[in-house]
Image 1 (cartoon, rainbow, N blue to C red):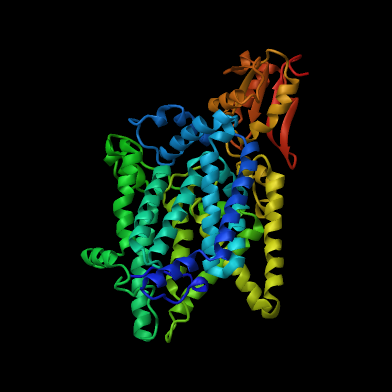
Image 2: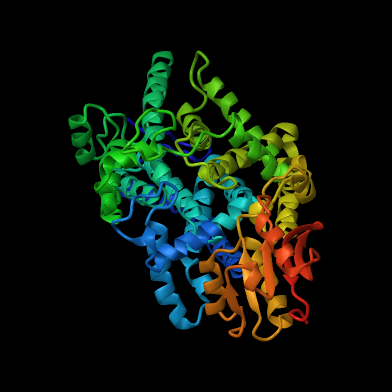
Length: 565
């Protein structure tokens, strides 16, 4: 069976000769497509490096750093953690050991794998965007993804979420490639390898496998229906029987028609996962129980199952309130556009387009949201639980913008598309600038921005990320030898700041406000009990400094008399 082709970039099948294969390879690496992807990869790496240089360390990133330095989660005998596999700590440890030797700060060194994953994500979006909507789609799709503030910070910090999203998109890209290249066996194995790495980053990335399996079944059914309607519809490269690759055809014959890419993902990914994460083999039943939706009735020695299910519509509501409004409207239009194209493909008569591409895009966008809603994916902070959906939403949004421009003004489609893209992207870029440094708590116009979100008690930031912005003032104005209590900042984050020289060596850390001279309180919309204890210990509720976004406090500093200069 041939996997879906994005219609805008599809080419006629080449002959099965050696010259035809070279022609196919040259077409796949044609200069425009390749240059745009490489340019986006370089631009994304540099841009994410700039973000990584100023972003603070969240509690989730601190947990990765703890595991990278031999904490409990880095122990091979430790139980698996659904939202944090061993891949991110392993890569962070290797990057820190290598990059810190050349003088890079530890905070930047441990983020290098995330930056490379972000560059990979941008390149894949450019390649898929080119297939989907030509060069304009290649230029637009990565911007629509990376200018979502929360997706931007996930791709710039050493957490498992951005890493899993990039590898998951790579697995689906390789699955598609297996249906359009003559080297189907290699592409199928690559899909399995990438899926195994994605699951090693975050265990709930296994939902990719049922997504591609269901897609393959639906695509086969749609192809049979279209063949019945029109016997002139061309097959994909090499035809349905895989005659272009004798090894692939022989394997699929033994698999009784199961697509080679799906079989490779089902077989290779567990091997990769077991090699990277051997502790999964120790408590397999408990791991399975943690991965199923809550309430499924599979307790294991009294261990809790997956986190409670969120309220109905929670992923959609949080996405609607956190994605910049222009991008949100483009992505919503992209979903409607894909459904309309899918409906058109089912009309009687000769098919005008292949419905398989629409199915794959819609499944990639909807499945992560559904997994978060049902409890398959853990209920994490912000939009982390469904980070994999954003690349597919960006692809749909890019195509919708370009289609709207062609429909509204065919004679001036290009300038109109450029104007629409600017109208969509500029507010998003402005939101990134205004929300800095707390991009994990950015809210859009529907939520009323940072003030509106704060009035509703919504999350102001990913836990602890804004603390980095107060460090220069703390270094300049703290009394020599002052004792500092950090409220809402992980100890691993404080240790990294100190190792990088962002904290004066004479400033010591204490655990209780009663023993402190200074208190750095991070406000994230949750409980403020520790801050109230600080007021009682310092006999004042008036901060001496702070970090604010649109007059909403993110970090407040309290001081005893004489401790702040």
